[in-house]
Amino acid sequence: MRAVMTTEKNKPWELKEVDKPKPAENQVLLKVHASGICYTDVHQTKGELPVNYPCILGHEPVGEIVELGPGVRSRKLGDRVGVPWVQAGCGSCEWCLRGKNAFCRKSFGTSASMQGGHAEYMVVWAEGTMPIPKELTYAEAAPIFCAGYTVWSGLRIAEPQPGERVAVIGIGGLGHLAVQYAAASGFHTIAVTHSEDKKKLALELGASEVVSTGKELQECGGADVILATSNSAEQTFDCIKGLRPDGRFIVMGVYGEPFQINLMDLLFKRARIIGSIQNGPEHLYEALDIAAKGKIKVMTETFKFDDVTTAYDKVAKGDVRFRAVLTP
Ligand SMILES: [Zn+2]
Ligand SMILES: [Zn+2]
Image (tube, rainbow, N blue to C red):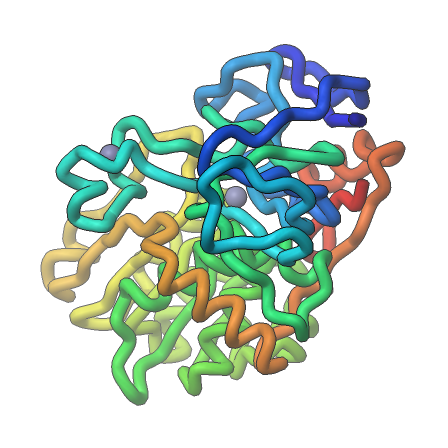
């Protein structure tokens, strides 16, 4: 099969011929129809996140089940499914027993201990798969398995209350979905972006207001919930001043520098900074369901495997509107 290989740190991805994997017990073989490129792929390629080279990256894969390993009972051949970052836990540690396998130290991660999605085929744990609603194409569904799942989880963990204001920092792969999920849920949604062309787009996506800086966010009335989706640490830290009293600042990305904050911004506002990952299958189910009902629209640019270098460069530069998806 053809696969996009990441062979060493900071080296361009290479299209190679590799052996097709075989599903073991409780695993299925997926024929990949679409695989989103997340900015995390860039972090992994640059060695900013742990990776075992050589490897196949991609943690937003969707496809069709074409082979079942022994013992699989919940999926059948032909099912349209995707898998998120965490496919399964060890099954026996405290966090697995509590049903929170995201905290398992021995979890099976897509593009980590399990092969990633930038390939024609991949083996995944059956229990980690989530069916794709029939209303969604493969290319639309793929970005929901990381970007959509992440931002919907972030909004849910913030526990926004009726009438509260939600701000989204950064209008990119995650942010364009976060604005739509917040607006579709009925919240007054404020987009924070420096980019002129994204300001108009953010309004079209459902934002009620668009501002450029934390000061402007503060001046327009601030936000009870801030969803930090930007890759820029500077822009992220700048927006903390836009939190309203009892506000929640949701961190969903990694930055190459320490988190900088003026404690006065937190203390006198009784504000909270909350780390959020992908907080469980319920949130993935909901993120897909909202998309299937047409309340949010995933905006993608699709690329064939032969154009993978172009796709990677566009993602690394933040030039994609808004998610690059590989279609083998
Ligand atoms: Zn991701
Ligand atoms: Zn475990």
